[in-house]
Image 1 (tube, one colour):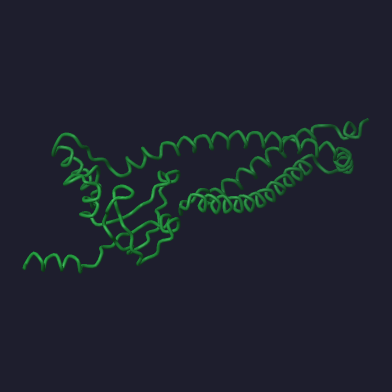
Image 2 (spheres, helix red, strand yellow):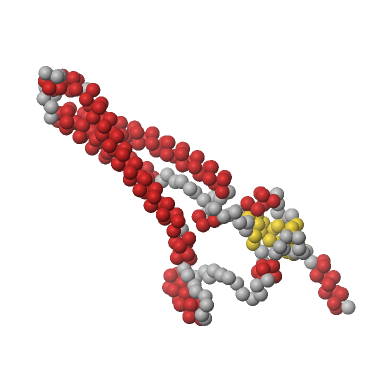
Length: 266
């Protein structure tokens, strides 16, 4: 009688719930409240569960190229599904403060042989090594681009100054000093650099938004792939003004050191 009652209560118990990630919900067409069967292999009997929540995936760089689906379930459900018994591959322990973390690491590592505890930031640094290499590569490309653009800017300014040889000669002959001519060329170059910086910031912001929109939709992740911060904008503007003023100064020096009559071709 007791056995029959226990079986009846077990049969009447509602299915347990699981949480699935948004990618699985979108691909499988699942919604909260749907009933699914979770099994360790296709075509075998499993555990009937109800989708209780849909979880948005975290912005984790290590999961970008992985197409795995995530399911969160109760520990006893996972244990029965995996068939592991009373053991796990890895687990996370939350601590309060750096001192508590150090003591926990020492206690766990000294408890037994065969496993080891790590700080979460050490694991994150290890899994992000590929992104560090890509970051260094992008930095090298940026340095090469800046040097090439500086040379190109200097050549353009030299050509523009050469086209104004007669105008500068006329100014010099009417009494305009070398310092005034030099300052006017440098100010003009700085204004052009400032205008180019504003245009570059707008183009960079639009490009960053397009990159994030495309790759976030492609990988279905909230991870931000490209950012334009005030620090980046300030660095770009200062660098542009510096390169523009330096290129203008070099071009102006070459111009003001030439006698006015030589500028007129006489």
